[in-house]
Length: 134
Image (cartoon, rainbow, N blue to C red):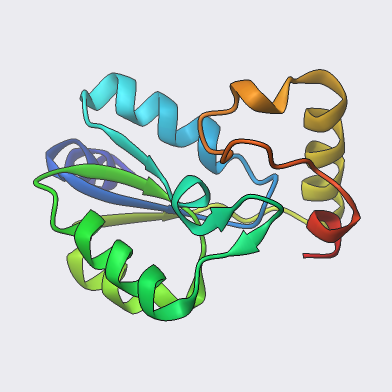
């Protein structure tokens, strides 16, 4: 564990992976604060108004642009862009939580937090049935 923490402190490009509701955003924001590295929330770059995904060619180009930055802590688990991000990352953290825990957290977040204040949410994105099916 100490070796991991030492490597994490020296890393300037860190991935935080896990399902919705696993705590990616919370961990990313805390790491960004402690390490003084800009957080990148992939949800804010992927989703367009009405939960429409960015078309794959534009999405992959955007991810390539993001990983070229000098340093970042990036959260999101988009499989199609994972190879690009893994190659660029110096460290990765994978959060594993049960489906029920994640679903509970998503519902709790929706009931207790104004989604417009979430740093990882694109503007105008409700947590609705389409999101929950995802």
